[in-house]
Image (tube, rainbow, N blue to C red; front, side, top):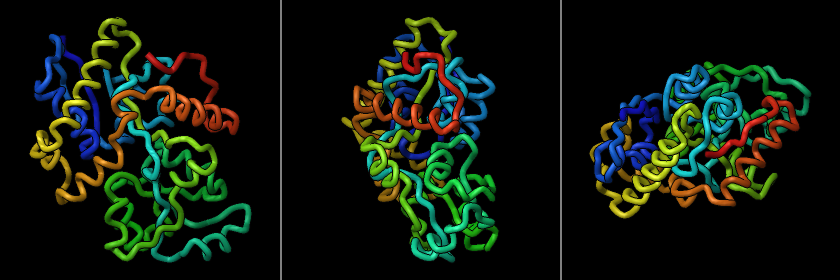
Length: 282
């Protein structure tokens, strides 16, 4: 049986899925047709129900929970891994002064409407409404070219912005952790609810085995990871993996599920996402 599988070319995803798609583990008769896309493109594909299995932002998951269930394996949650709001014009202090007004005309580049990053920005800075949606890898350049005043960065840009003379205003992951005491849920792996329960459980089991294989053989997928890492050097690749792939990627467990439930409960209370009727998990 062949299933479509969407994930990003970022090192954390290629690290997780290398063993699965290259048959370094027994896939128990399943084959996977892989589609690589940035997270917001994957979010949009999930909204259209295009893929059997896909990575997506937890924010986007709120809008497709009737079509997809969340796997316990493959998610990106953690501490100290949140999106960063950066600038080349402001410091934390000067931005705070500027934002004393209820609304702001500052131009903010962000990586997609349905990203968890955008959700957190809305909680922390509701007055920032002048938003421009950009591919995540273009946000630093847009700041340097004065196309935006503030940039919301994710993924490997966490490790490169300082080299370009840009300043961190706030770590929204740190903001979330202080607000809730939970790990920040960034992205998860979901599976189409129309697939047989047996297939859903098998895919979850295989992704867990793929993550465990990657941890046991961390250099095994180096060529595959490098191929998709957009000229990132190896040290940055592995920093990226270390930041986003952890115990929650093997199994959400009680702590991981609590963090996700907290995110969705808070979002529903604030009217950011619709009320959820389904059990979120497989």
